[in-house]
Image (cartoon, rainbow, N blue to C red; front, side, top):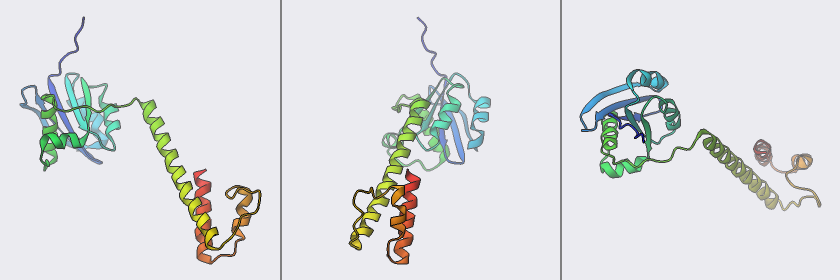
Length: 198
């Protein structure tokens, strides 16, 4: 039975929108890499040059973590993603610099103190993004409909019998409504929002 190789280095990546800082330690927490700072756009190139299949990398969850995870996973022993509040709880102090943050991540990872979060496969991420987008469109639509209902209520206007208020057939009815120029502009904006959300 083959056992999984044990990593020789533990690399902490403090990633930001435009740049990242990397630092590494060995299993005895001795510094063995960095700190290195480089632009985010060069992370894959940097990783191919500086990382090996014997490196266990750790990053905190942030907006571009998935991109980093996907780029590094084939190049290293492992990529562990951690939740920032968990790191803060363990450290019990705000790390003041990016270099210290990267080293702290590496040291905590080498000591086995960082609980990993699950990284979903790309298909699941895409489905999550789709659901989140739909939720956003439904919310936009609901807000616009509420404002249009409020306009009718304010002017005591009743919709024609047997018609759905927000269909294309009703657009001319909405536009012919006698309301102030500002209310008309807001109404047209809400109608456009509904069309966009659809």
